Length: 77
Image (cartoon, rainbow, N blue to C red; front, side, top):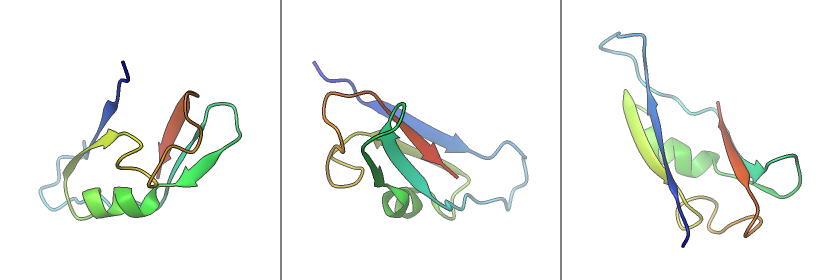
């Protein structure tokens, strides 16, 4: 059974006008190796919001898994 994790972002500053702005996002194998640029998907889902949730799942990020069956990390700035 595959598990997919939900990624949640929110701004803790408390400012009513604060909004998320994704600068970049990389989904990559832990320890190096295969990766893909998930920045476009993250920006479309989160930019301009004060709260964002997204499934970390190959169906949503990068159009496919950069290294099936290997543990990965999603780094978002």
